[in-house]
Image (cartoon, rainbow, N blue to C red; front, side, top):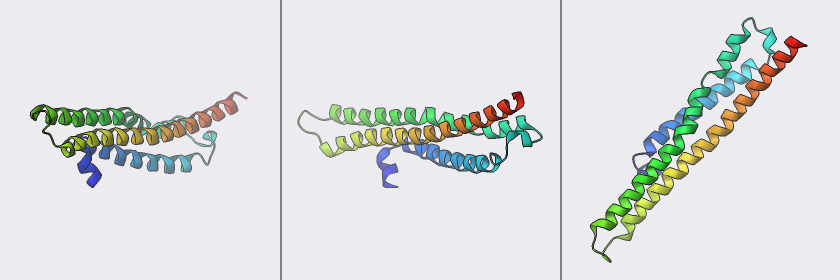
Length: 144
């Protein structure tokens, strides 16, 4: 909870992104584990199965896209606070603790946004690769 307070406003959407990311990854993992046990040919509606496997990959990709942007917005607002504090004070009479809080906010939101993006990208690529291999296997069986 302390990290959320230190990171400022943009930690809330980042927290939401991380919760959605974990939920999507968990749901996709269970879905893939269940469906990929059987070859695609064994299903009556292969297109529906592929559609089901693609489900939720677009929202996961959206999280990959927006998480670093939210982190950068937190960086910008944190640095704006620092410069605002410096501009309000007479030269030589400022509180370094207040400035360091703004810098901490900037770095924290950037790091969280990047961590979310890295984790989401790993799983997005994993699910896409599994899906492509599954469909390629089906196509080679159908053509061969």
